[in-house]
Structure formats: structure tokens, C-alpha cells
Length: 90
Image (cartoon, rainbow, N blue to C red; front, side, top):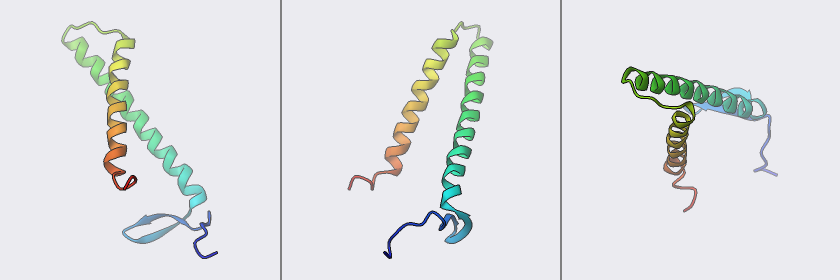
């Protein structure tokens, strides 16, 4: 059938040009890279927030610090999804 999706079709496009990496590899690659980037950003945010609290002489437990950052990242992820998916529900 004409509209059948093939896992071997190009999975990345840059400025309308297909990059010859099949969807079969492009999807796991995209998920892995974006997960690693997010993980590193969150580690840096946690250490930066902890350092800032210590410099101010404030005591904050690791559990409280992680709770605050989890709240922030959940808020951002939820809103990021709905900002870019506004056409999904119309």
C-alpha cells in the first residue's frame, strides 16, 4: 500500500534533506541522545542549586532539593508537550 511506513526509510531530515539513517536506528538514537542530554542538564541543575543554597548558608536536605527539582522538571515537561502539541487535539 502507498502510505505504508517502512522502517528503512530515512529517519532524519535537515532543511528538507533526508539524512540516510533509517527510522529503525534514528528513533532509538534520538531517544538516547535526548535522554542523556536531559540527564546531564538535571545533574548540573541539582549541583548548582545545592551549591547556591550552601553559599547562602541555607540547609536543605537532598530529598527536599530533589523534590523541588522534580516539581520544576515535571512542570516544564508537561507544558513543553502541550505547547508543541497544540495541533494534536484539534
